[in-house]
Image (spheres, rainbow, N blue to C red):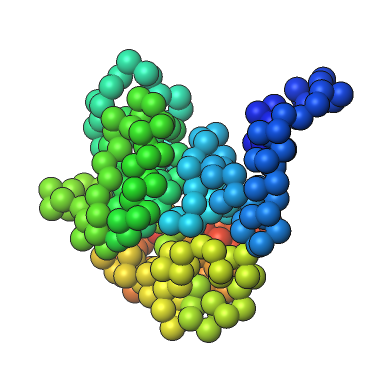
Length: 272
């Protein structure tokens, strides 16, 4: 918050530690502290947060990007590498040239979609969300992402319904951080989450598996023959989600852990 108020990073502050703060900086800092003391998450107080090296706009319209979801991004990018596609820095002169498509369902701030676009130079990235408010944030973040925005398509709708029919059977990858909190679990969430982040992006339904199941059931019809689904989930959902993926017809299903060693990322492949 001090960096935000002063406009100086930590190194600059240390180098100029005896400088007198301006009244504008003091007033800004007081406003930030007041909001934080009221329980507003730091990310919303600042209005932006870093994800995958991207500085993203975040506010109450979207979930806060978290380290667990960066693990999802890493797994998704490695899946595309496994399928033989290029991974790495995007050529700024390549424009909108693509030769395969991937989709981020329930994109929210656009964090996953933009991470994929930044790391998969040949991908056309589709980002969907049922929330018009969230899509406004995603569009703002895409606009600020530079040349990669030329390969990002943002559409409104629930899960696969937002995608054009011509993508059916062509997606190399489907990735999502869907709602996976159950209605009973919502009451147990910290106030900093439950009182501020959008409930619709957190709560899936009575079991918490509703969104995961809906994506897994429909995904085989949209994926290319060797495609894969990468989903974020809660650790206690790993067994049930794996069963649902197998029931949907996926040949290979694994669950990978996050940075804390907890089951967090389901990977379902069409072929073993």
